[in-house]
Length: 416
Image (cartoon, rainbow, N blue to C red; front, top):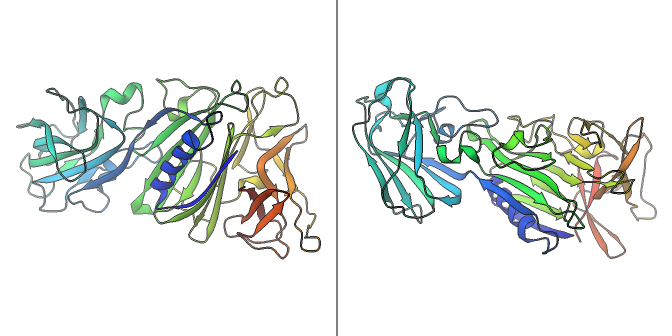
């Protein structure tokens, strides 16, 4: 088991820190295998108008944005749309969707690459391109390859004659469609294979960042699967749960990671809200033969919606009987389990200043399934968020249900 405590610069940085933690920070026997890691971590433009921001040219998958990128009025020439790849890549094919007003589409433009995002080199020049309204065009990028590059941009020197704006409604990379094109993964996405605790009992967890700066949400979708298919997209993997989501923001984020070879817990402080998510196996009351794949996904949002972290619907999934906590049964169905002791009205308190940690037990009317790994119930009686509780050689941090701080609104996360 490994732990990491730090402060991320923003939601993108938190995502990348999570990828690094799981793939390299758990130890050789428990590190998670990255099956695929795609998308763009930065999107920018020379100028834009409201509701036609540069990120809207890179669609979906959650809340695929309308419109596309449009330059500010009068800045239609010598304009550019820039992005940074999560993984370096040489673009050999490029598809652009032009404007609904044909003469706003780029006529003379250049695909350029850069090693530093400052100095640019031409990859392919296009001149005299004509468009119909809403037309999609695929361009072959031939010539000598510069190799895999992270920074790319489309530099437009002239459009079709419009003197208001230049418009690109969508950018796609056809070569990625057998893997994951920008139509689905414009923002960073990662597909993991966790090895399990024996190396022979893996589980599959996927994360994808999605955001909409105009609407002030910056979130991460999370789902669990039973396998990985290279030609399938994020939501179409075998046995995939419809994604839940972790709401974040585009400001510094203190965080606590706890991970091992079969599960990860992500807790973060977003403004004054405490957000937590569990992805991977819980500890079942049964043998591996009896319950071979006890996959649990818990996150503060029940779907990958455009919901801000401050929304009243954001909650702590570990309280159970919520659409934000899903457990996979042996038959492949996903249920919404109860969670003891949150499900009871019993009031707990400390004993002479000592705070006992109670296992969070998952059950329903038919079965008692198991307990969460690395998370316990702790009472809020005389307690406070970010207190620590020591049990033997273990250290646990006390965190809360978003901004709620009643007696049963706390949990303890092991951090050492």
